[in-house]
Length: 101
Image (cartoon, rainbow, N blue to C red; front, side):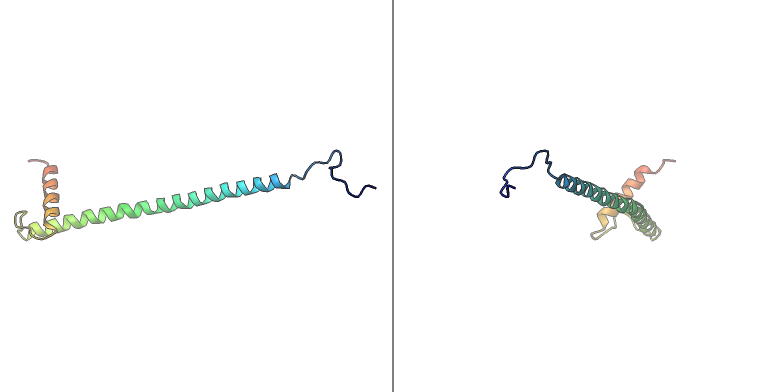
């Protein structure tokens, strides 16, 4: 018997466990990416109705504010303060969209 053999025996093939582990790691990374992307997309889809509701609430709030201003007899020229230019522009936009009689 030769105890100090330096070469591999004939027909010996190295184990494939390294390639198998790399394959499992790659599959785990891809699966994890798909899960994270799915969670992000589901969160975004849940927030869409919230954003639409917030926009509608803001629009209704502006309309109510204009209605209260008109009811009290306030005109665009009498507006003062930081909020005045926004309300004046909003009322001008609403006037331009109103059908003419």
